[in-house]
Figure 1 (cartoon, rainbow, N blue to C red):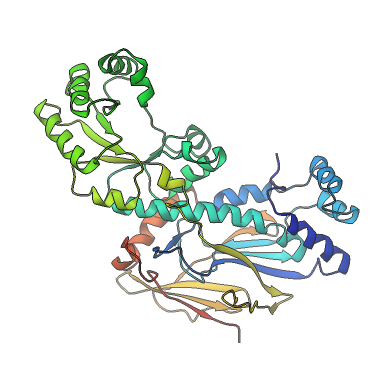
Figure 2: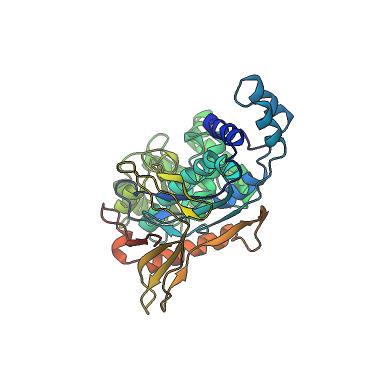
Length: 426
């Protein structure tokens, strides 16, 4: 398997032209950044670089890919020979997974020849735009949940491969588990799941369905009680499982009202330790609305993976330096700042972050409390040592969210949680 064709046609058009005119070997620096955050967002979350490192290692053009490209007139013979030997030999650095970013943050820097760096654009952006969007959306849900576990359940609402990446990004952002088994296998994420309404409908009555589930999974399972009448469903669940039942799940209706009624009914039946799980198109706003209700955990799916819940991060991949010389794009509303950037985040002595400072072709004046934001991912085409694990990324995000001013955690629209000061090359 190769990731080489997960790209756009024009990447190879530019490559062919650069090889022909002699500019392909010019040393270039590309940067990934967001011009602005999605509407209503106060921070972005870096996610996907762990996946991207693996995909860049697999970015190879084998005979089958080269034959396809030549047969369809995408590349000429000279370009085919160049691609046959392609291995990324440059340097990549950036913000580690779990770090926050804001408009203008240089979250990824790719340095190498024009040829080897330009053809990575689409792969880089497709991974980071997807995973960063999921991570930012789910981080807001975790904040709204106030310490209660959230389960990722979006596999049936998105592309089959996207579901695995989404589960990883959601776990990075603080979700407790996922329903997706491939994400569990590939990334070691805890998986969970019991039964859908179809299992209840399969049986002649609800009690029979519950009895079957308990016989197979034991009392430490979760029974879905809203296929028919919720109150009767709860009574049937406790009658079958007893007060030792671990949890019930509510998946429809006015969850605020139903959760309160379910808690009262469970307690009256002696099931005081039985937990209440709620699901059903939950997002950060509906989770926040349930904060005062007796809900023990949440299941979120559609809003995790959909465009409404996880709008694209809006990241772009722009050339900022050629042979050590800053280059800039001057297009209206799309201007860039030339030169390779170095970024630090400034903090008060208390640990509260105050500002991000980004300097082009230099380094910020170091102050007490500054934290360098970038780390190496590739050096000379070799994967750098010490890349963060998924668990370390989760911890980094927890610490980062604690460090920003509390206004930055609000779900309402507002300014970015931190200002970014970009100092151009002199």
